[in-house]
Image 1 (cartoon, rainbow, N blue to C red):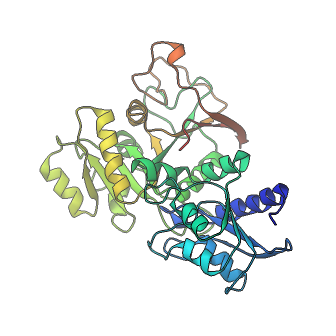
Image 2: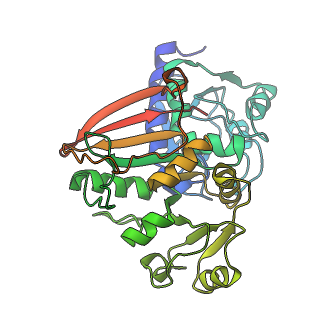
Image 3: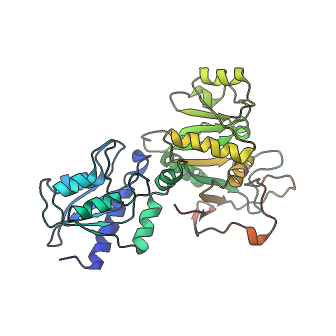
Length: 375
């Protein structure tokens, strides 16, 4: 007998909570959680995907339930179980071998080699499959936006963050921007860095600020994001902090075909990966770079600036979410910098309107998060 819908949603919500624990450690794979419930309604086991290459959530939950046969039990899993041999065996095999009666799935796997196949295999094996939809399904999809975009396009999901004054400026006319945002806001950005596969800036920011672009938190960071500098003419200084920490902390420098060969060779000699982006204009080169970064396994990028690079990403239509810190100060100045220096639109009717907006206070700042796309 099928469990009542309210129990479905409660256990599926728990699977989503478990999935969140995977964090950046599972990238570029998705975050997945699973719960197994017996025919009497008792929770038998829980699991989540802990680390890339490790057991998937379904296998973890089956092991937590004692392994062996779980005849008549139901599994609640946040993502369609995999049906192909990758770093680990197919989860559909593990579900079949455990003799589960029913699988409730939060969202489908969008990958071309998987989408719907896992559910079909389970049904062919006589296992009841339920995909409830609704609010929990939306949450399940949002949980894995980097994975979903990468699976569908081959490009990383891009989160653009910036800190601006009340009058919408990110730097004075002289280029001073330290610090517009509060200490608490900057600490949150380090958390975002730890969650991303890569952090990207333009050569202007790299030259002016000489940043490290690493995640520096109070607690230990399991892995550092790849640092990416968009530097069309390969001008990044060999004495910069970014070069100084390469290759122990991965660094990619994106150049154009106009970059001098000697400068490219020098960057490579000092431990940087050099990516040559092709295309007739900045947006085309952005897409070329993202194709190559995605092919290397990156599924998420935190884009930190500056305004020209943000504008090129915007014109390339490759910004998926925006997070803006608005600080309680005013800069003024006709030549002060805007957060996104793109071609823009000529009519308000053509403006981009977010799918969803959230706001919160962080220290003295207001943080506005705007989701522009859903994958």
